[in-house]
Image 1 (cartoon, rainbow, N blue to C red):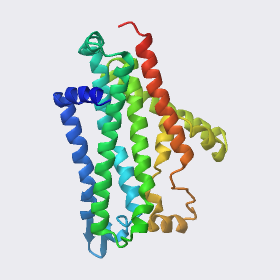
Image 2: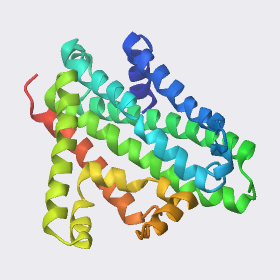
Image 3: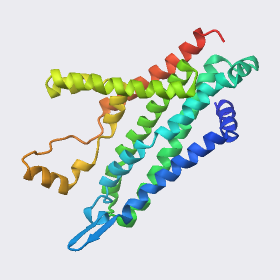
Image 4: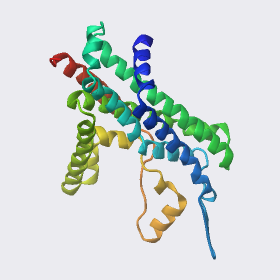
Length: 276
């Protein structure tokens, strides 16, 4: 496995566009820490984000993993470009001539998916710990550990999403069109979910649409902002009580792992059946 991964690392190391995307991604991740300096002081109105408790454990795990997942698109571009680029640069055929089997080729790409997901997860975890211990009012080990399921869900979410990018790159064979395919899939999913919500009762449509790949990935880490006391207070004042389950469900993790398996399997199937 290390041999396959080292081949991909070598390719990524000397790809300038990949380096730019990876650096941009981690710079944007680091910018999450700038939220701590968000401060509004206008006359009698004073708002400091730190004072709202958003950096308290275990809530900060939920907030940071949700925000970090928003910018995962940058690493998706890395996965798509390195996969589709094998066709554009004709390196795929050369790798197969040099003795790399099609199964090993797909495995090498998936190992890269795992590597990027691990690096991002470790970085988000360390960033969250630093921010939490710097600004949280509660730092007991019990509270710190309680939010770790969000970090695990973040890792699963990245692996599933990047596996989708791997599948799209091998299916379409052109980076721009592969990204367009993923965006189109997202739009169609949202239209379908909207139609289901319009025609079915909420509990019925959610029970069905949770199996859609991108919606499933989104459900792994639900939006954290409505958990804030201020948001709940405003909602209560206007007569709209927020009733929402923010926890990470094991069933959603299993669905995401199933989609990951299917994306990787069909990536191999496409490559196996395609005449290169």
